[in-house]
Amino acid sequence: MFPAAGSRSEEVYKRAQRVMPHGSSRKSLYDMRSYAHCGEGSRIRDIDGTYILDGSNNFMVLIHGHRHAPTMTALSEQLGHGLSFGLPVLGEVLLAEHLCARVASVDHVVFCSSGTEAVMHAMKAARSITKRQKIAKCEGLYHGTYDYAEVSNAAPVKPGFQGFPVSRLSSDFGMPHVLEDVVVIPFNDAAVTEQILREHAQEIGGIVLDLAPSRVGYVAADPSYVKALRRLADELGMLLIFDEVASFRLSYGGAQELYDVTPDLTAFGKIIGGGMPVGAVGGSAKAMKIFDPTEKGGVSFTGTFNAHPLTMAAGLATLNHYRVEDIVALNKKGDRLRAMIRSGIAKQGLPAHVEGSGSFVSIFFAPRMGNGYHAIAHRPEEQALVQRFWSAAMDRHLLVDVSARLNISTAYSDADVEEAAAAIIESIEEAFNRSQPAAA
Ligand code: PMP
Figure 1: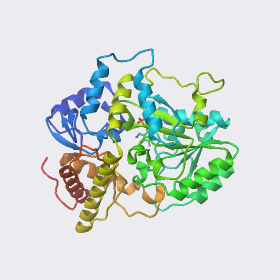
Figure 2: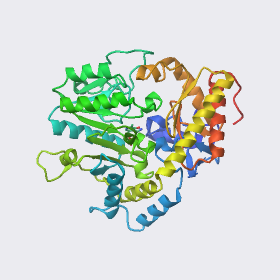
Figure 3: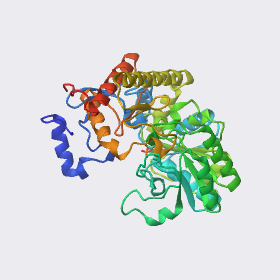
Figure 4: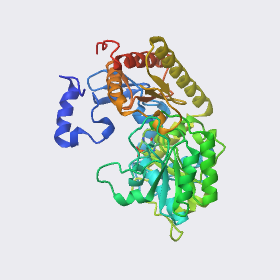
């Protein structure tokens, strides 16, 4: 699959294999077909000169696509001032003011360098505030690579399974004690979740939830499930943490704005850094006090690159141009893309279906059986189809994320949406071996 024979990318890939494990620093990219050279709007040009329609946007980061002019200008201005300092910069305060004004549940916010760190700090905060050691998270959902977050993040899919999930390590030798500290609950199943939370009532400090998890096709969490978590957290003395690293893009105040539920803490990342490495934790003044450096017994929130000046500048410029009207227009394009794919699938009689919300799209090759992880997530027997779909899309110069997911940016024109829909439908057909590969 990687890379095209005789290409410049092949040459670079061979060099990469000599200096990195399987030639890569990023598991999700190790079998990519080419190396990126530059990007403009909705397209990437690779080092072989091929233009690719970008349905990844660096895994949901680039909400305005490549080289968004206001973001690039803000970055150039900051570059002129220097790179990083052992002093805070104004940009940090400006982005903090923006987020506090934008997200109703956020009175205070702190910045770090990745979504993984943001989730980790939020979990540590919940444990410290409650003086309880356990965290509850949903089976199968991805929250980055902190040990606690990784538990059961890729649990084997048992189609239609309902019941009590098992905590699993993410690798053969993870840290076994972590299993004792992470309680796994079933996404969207309030009754079983309630039983589990009650069973560990005295030990769980925080419940982490993604409101539109990628692993379940960005299907929105059921409002009654989210409300049940809030009610149980209040009753049992736990903190409710939303992981909005990816879902923040769905609405102006984050996906949480679509629910009548206020979390204690929220983890942010991806689009809020405008394309630069970023993470943030925000929440009520009461909960965020745990990060107050003058408080005794708080969580030590440190990091050489926390609130990096370039990130702060890029993030603010990007978010200033992601207004309500931009979000409404983008989400409409997402609706149109899903509708076009859905009608193409129906017309061709393909046994596939499309899920997603807002600007997120996810393709499945087996029927949906309900609202939970085992009802929606890709089954083991779909994996070969997922791979073939990715490769077929790449043949059509459309980059989708591994796992047959994609997202669109505000840089997508109507024509880009149509091009993506056509490439996706053809790629699904090809995955089922119903058509010949297009000429590359
Ligand atoms: N949480 C969610 C919901 C995510 O989608 C991701 C990244 N895909 C993370 C956490 C981790 O973020 P990062 O890759 O920046 O560490």
